[in-house]
Image (cartoon, rainbow, N blue to C red):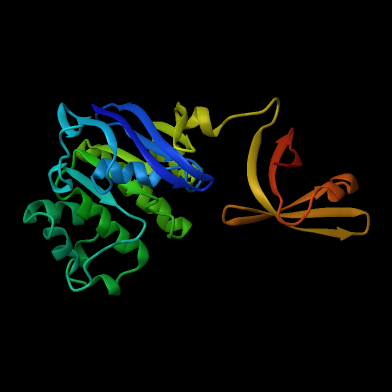
Length: 284
């Protein structure tokens, strides 16, 4: 069990705010954290890792990591950390990067085998693809059999095919080692596939705490889906108006009427939703 009750002043995306988190996480749980940039997600991970200071209390399996009188050093917390940047040692081979954490060669070989990296164990990081480097980073995080695995958007820089592969590896390693995992992500499909629980943080506070299905498959009336995006352009073709909208890494076209074309302008944040397969667009 991880018990978190912390408070830290931050300068967020909308000005000064307080990160106030009161949360219990069960052992072996996989928790995903979502929310806008600047809401405090990464800071929470860094406080858990001991990389940033905070007031309050953190207790993990009965061991005090943070209290008024005690701050347990990062190296004694038994954590694994996977960053968006791979952070590998450039002058060390794949296997040497793992053995830097622990000299357990048997564990290194097991992790390399599980991640299909055995044949690359003597290669230097710069000779590997981005996906291969992140698999090495993931293996390295498990070398010390961590109590807690922290991941900060670990797959955001990878292409969709490699993200799918790494999601499988993450899920497998999480189950195999029985670790407790907390992952920051902006990818709904990633959260849905990996996490058993999702937290939504807004302006430093948890506003939603439920299963990914309950949060991500929210509906509004009879709408079947709803996505947020940015209006890039409105193109007129004869009597038809087409809104070109960026949603994540995709660009979609939605037919709108003349009245909607007058209300909307380039750069607007919009919501695209559908009722009975008839898409509609509305300004946020």
